[in-house]
Image (cartoon, rainbow, N blue to C red; front, side, top):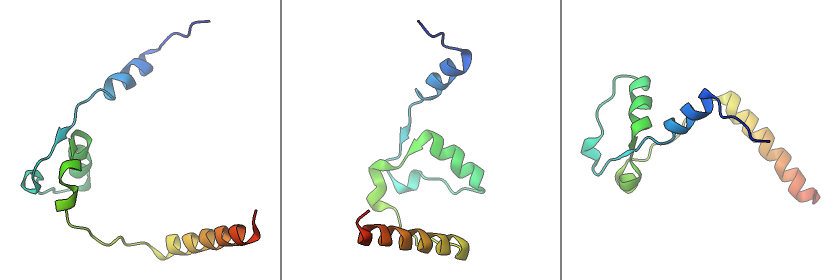
Length: 84
């Protein structure tokens, strides 16, 4: 049985065909005014060629997430030690 492709399947295929602009210098990255601007820009641009030139910033993790991670890691450690 042959499945028909509906409109949404064709649209998602077209979206995946967008070509990225490869940034070749840190100076090509604009100053953003909002998180939405950053998200929109990174949908069409890639910094893979200059990753080694970008500054690394420490991640901030909230207390709630930190406690959840500690709980999960504790459970994983018990599973590994228990051999299951």
